[in-house]
Amino acid sequence: MDEETLVLAARKGDRPAFDLLVGRYARAVIARHLAWTKSAAAAEDLAQETFLRAWQGLGRLKDPRAFGSWLLSIGGYVGQEWLRRKVTDERFRRSAVTPQALWTESGEGPDLPLAQAVGDLAPEVQQLLSLRHDRGLTCLEIARELGRPIGTVTKTLSRAYAELRARLDPE
Image (tube, rainbow, N blue to C red):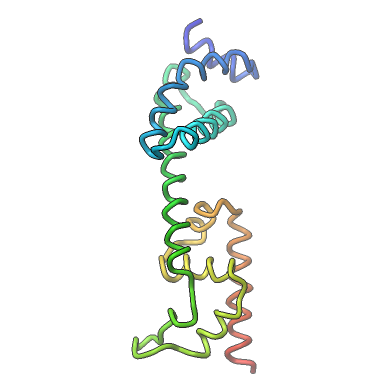
């Protein structure tokens, strides 16, 4: 069967047709992920994620003849997300928000009340604040990096700001 026919069949829910497409591209997708991860196990996991996203997004593929390049571009996005998560996790482990890390706007010394208030927040809230303010990420970028819904990120940050305002200015 030619690729276009397999894609059209897979779009209609024909799982064996999609499995044939996976078989044709598995080595290329795994090789691409192996270049990112340098780990066969991680590359296979990312390949599975790539194929899952392809299966879920097959209806959005405009040209069935472009399946191969479309699939590899999905693989590129999956690999970039993996790398971003890895870098973010490593940076956060090395530099979590601590009271000593917060400084006044003038840069002269620590803003102790603010530092103490942030230090009293839950570690996951401190992580969100760190990503937002230390790294300058948008809420959408934070949501993508952490794999959380954007509403969860915005609501958590909003509550954190309200709690900090209440602690710092009780009136």
